[in-house]
Length: 217
Image (cartoon, rainbow, N blue to C red; front, side, top):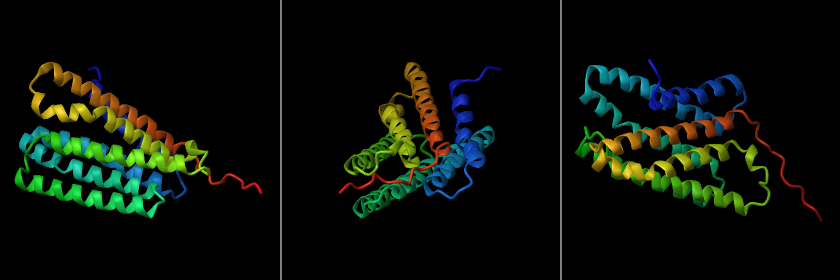
């Protein structure tokens, strides 16, 4: 039996988990949060498939909790990645508002298979978090070794994933029955997920560079 693009995506989701367990002995907040994120999505795919084999309705209800947990973990990653108190407050309050909106949606329609508005809204928020992260690094001249920053690789992975998937997320709910769009969505979502997983994996293979640019008098 040949592997589908979705199967490949699910398998590669385990790669960051294995890399963390293999190469990371020191405590690093960036890598720890990334590890929990990939552990979550890996376990979610397993349990979703198992529940779906018994009851599609139960699987849909189980899947409705994916975005809230995913968003909490990603927001926590960005929160720890930032140094500015202002940006931390921005991430905190935006996250609270988004989670309130999701809670209301779950209460009103707990077995909705997919909600384009929620997925699109989540994508916009993560993209905004990413851009503000890059902007902060550009303003800080001491951070020239950004490629040695685990947060940089994590943010880059999330930014590319949500940027690429944004429009198919918005269109999925209305075009899901269109067979051409169905296959396009599967490939775009899986390929962007594979790209995210590979880029984020770099964070587990590097050692953070702590030395700052020397000051010249």
